[in-house]
Amino acid sequence: MKYEFLDKINDPSDLRILSVSNLNDVADELRYFLIDTVSQCGGHFGASLGAVELTIALHYSFNTPEDKIIWDVGHQCYGHKVLTGRKNQLYTIRKKGGLHPFPSREESEYDVFGAGHSSTSISAAIGMAIASSHKKDDKKIVAVIGDGGLSAGMAYEALNHMGSIDQDVLVILNDNEMSISPNVGAMTNYLTRILSSKAYTTVKEGSKNVLKKVPPFDQLAQKTEGHIKGWFAPGMLFEEMGINYYGPIDGHDTRFLVKTLKNLKKISGPKLLHVITKKGKGYLPAESDPVKYHAVPIFNREIGVKKNTNQKITYTKIFDNWICNIAEKDPRIFAITPAMREGSGLVEFSKKFPDRYIDVGIAEQHSITLAAGLACEGQKPIVCIYSTFLQRAYDQLIHDVALQNLDVLFAVDRAGFVGADGGTHCGVYDLSYLRCIPNMLIMAPSSEEECKNMLYTGYLHNGPAVVRYPRGEGLGVKVSEELENYKIGVSKKIRLGKNIIILSFGSVINVCQDVSNKLNCTLIDMRFVKPIDENIINESIKKYSLIVTVEDNSIMGGAGSAVNEVISKNNYQAKTLNIGVPDKFFSHATREEQLVDSGISADNIIKKIKKYIKNNNLYDLNHSSKIR
View 1 (cartoon, rainbow, N blue to C red):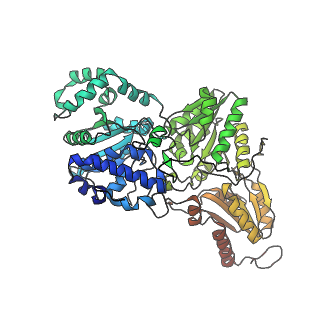
View 2: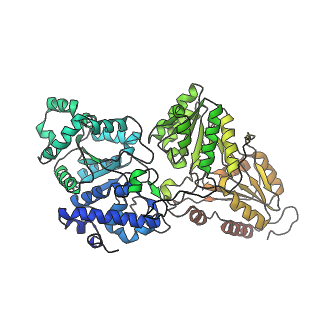
View 3: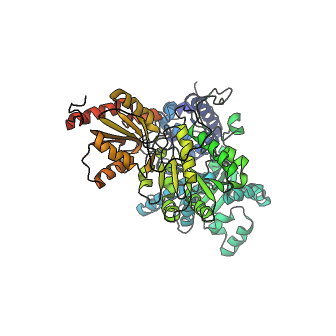
């Protein structure tokens, strides 16, 4: 399809030569292009549709890339990518070798700060503003953060600092009443009160006149007047922090957005513009169901996203079923999530047990210490969290849970490679960063049945326990109704073979089974990463010429390292080959492609084993024949 305006925009300078009266047409074309393209390639959807006019207004009003726009998370940046020269590549987004799913400094000079996790934009903007001031180069710095991002502690830390220093930073609060799950917390309630208050209706109409006058409040009001203003103005929280507040304004009124932004450029100091947008704007199914349309697969734009009829059960659904069943029997069960109700499989739990469901917002640190407090009072908290989100609460994990040996179960979803979300969401470090913490019980299920039983084992364990499982579907293993409490630190023999033993950790078991069959190796499902099964390692030393460990975690410090430590501790002489994620970051691709690229595929593992045997001139200890 040909676009009258969009086809002529190769970078924001092309946009800025247009008349303001043409910007609504650009918005219509950009929104249509996003709907048309994402329906064919999939990707983050609703947030980008809601930010169309805001994106256009920002690039029209500011001299990017000299002026800096920092996008928080980046779910809403597809329109930004289109306007900054990547229109013809948008169909490749989230695919191997294609556009990054989020802003990426290596991809474009317009992506001034990489993102993927929330609430980093304001801190980065302050850092850039301080640098700009130091260099005296007069750049304008803008951070765009969603209302969901303001539920995170890091955003408040940044705002607190921002209000105490005289740096020229503009924060745009893109308030669409949604992050991924429905927003929760005092900030959400505060923003809702702003929109429903009488003061807002007065300020909303009056703000158009106020913003025409430059300079603003700082020269019109001294301390007394500022405090009086804080009593009734809707942005009193930000004003009291030392940040000039403007708005709320309509985030879909392009002409007024441009006028407001150009006025705010003339105002120095810390300031916040509150913009109201609608997630999924312009596509009725996305407007009606913003959670479903946050990120979408390929779909028919005429009928929307179809319900997934795939019969294979996901690991997340295994957890969903298990926690609902166990909570029926145990009133001590609490489920805690940092704003990932849908992603972590807690929708049913939240409906059945609303009094024991706690969504803390995007506040991972708080979620862990909250769980610690519940455990202190004899409850059984279960923290439902993604592997890469748990990283954000590492101090609380050590200091507040493990050090006190508190009875908290961590259901760690999205462990290992996750596919299209790329490096920011790859959960390939958890075994390494968890193993070194005392008192931790760490389990890695190899199938759906194993996952259910490990959750049960962790639930019965008195102390901190982790069950880490991957995104998506399992192997298709039937899940029984019976619950088995596994013996701590004991592995499971899958197949007996000769010469070589493979110690498999977690969801890579299917790859290891293929290798085991082709090379006639013994295969062990290790089950536990900590405590590790030392008996099977001792047995392996005596019986096998080569010990191979396989995991979808960083080789450095991971499960294979745990095996090496046992060997070293006992002063064994043994040949070991550790296979896992190399010491590098992996970009977006499918999970299968990421596994292959990291060397965790049957063919790659066989090649590595044969190369190791050749380089080390290995012989079968029992039969003195060279291993082929």
